[in-house]
Length: 275
Length: 310
Ligand SMILES: Nc1ncnc2c1ncn2[C@@H]1O[C@H](COP(=O)(O)OP(=O)(O)OP(=O)(O)O)[C@@H](O)[C@H]1O
Ligand SMILES: [Mg+2]
Image (cartoon, rainbow over all chains, first blue to last red):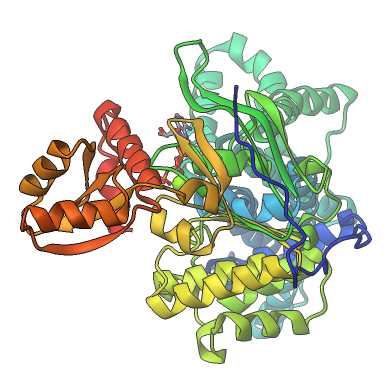
């Protein structure tokens, strides 16, 4: 044992006690952490541009449909689909960076000394990325609707509003699940570059591989809906599952790719060193 | 009040892992500045990270104001922490970093401007992104963040890093004043002088273990005499012949002869002196140098160069 002996603070003349017997401050509420973490998603230059990209990419996608879309009338579904494609990339990226920047940019030192409960901070971020995901989709849909109206006016035809409310909902749920996949990868890797690459590999390379495998091997084609979350999540973009089995497949694949990895990642975040 | 009790951190799983912090115990008291002194890699930052809940300890406990850090309801209002001023999002402005912290701590908005004024960051500088901050500006911003919640305790890791002489002077005054008002200040450094000028109490750590601790007066007290002559070798021989022990320290000698005797010995030997004074502090300096040398010998990775530059 190595102990040092330091004599107690003698009653030195002029020593104040401004800091003794102050009432302990009240706890930082979860809503406050949610607010702070939301603010941190916007208040850097890169964060601001990511948010702006939601609007910019939606406008570009709508413009592309207006310019190069099919001539057979003006359908809102074309616009809805077009704006959804960039959102499926940008929203998960926002989710990834909200987590990984604490480590890659080392802001965690400040964040976790001000709020020493890491689970609370991560939970607040989860609330924020889901909210941003839903709002981002609503903004994208609105811009798509504007594009539809403009295209109708330009071509002199009445636009067809062929997207039902339940399909809106299923597309939003599908995107939010994509956001959660990004979030999970962020929590697992805690490194911006690594998590971004991993997400792209998961969403594009892996999806291609499983597609090819299912085409070649019937046993995998039968198994795939249970274990391929890319597939079950992607199906949401055309509507909610219509059988109990399809719901079960969504649940099982989600458990494998989302719930278990996130739980594992959260435990590791709690134990990791922040430096 | 900060209390570390038998704090231990082992990196690597098995018992052959590296003991970065080895049963460290000490107390930093209110009303005093406690200096945490140790050579590079001694375990200062690791200890402070454990204290603030950023690194889980292998064993032992650390409390601030009687509680574990994670049990503080709103830590920023009770403990000001500055561990690494560069650990900020480079795309955020200085002012925004303080605003985020103020919002987390539930502080009124005016507090941010007060702190910017206190640490001497101008309006224009505070609107700049941290990417474009100089090292000293980052350090000032870090101090502003630590002081923001008007905490009773300050935990600062190498706070003088990157500050210019005026900045260092300003910081020392600030910390001393802070302690005088009843605050607890714990600051680390690898420079003895840095600690010597500001601390009331000193804790010395080497290779993860506490090797000395006490008030500055206790640690610096040295009854021996420090003497410097143009010809050290001849003076050492003369002192030895007169029955006194000598030891080379820095560019002079430490001897157990008192001031008058040393002067007489030098006079008889016709050796002109350059300096003659009580050896206060020489003991601690020697010990610290020995500690640094030991670490350097046993360290396989090149950590030795860093400290000198900082
Ligand atoms: N994650 C880690 N894994 C292995 N060893 C580590 C880890 N973190 C720190 N160490 C080691 O622990 C020891 C103490 O490091 P620490 O940063 O606490 O030193 P320090 O006293 O702050 O030094 P300096 O004056 O250079 O800042 C060093 O030998 C360091 O290499
Ligand atoms: Mg250090």
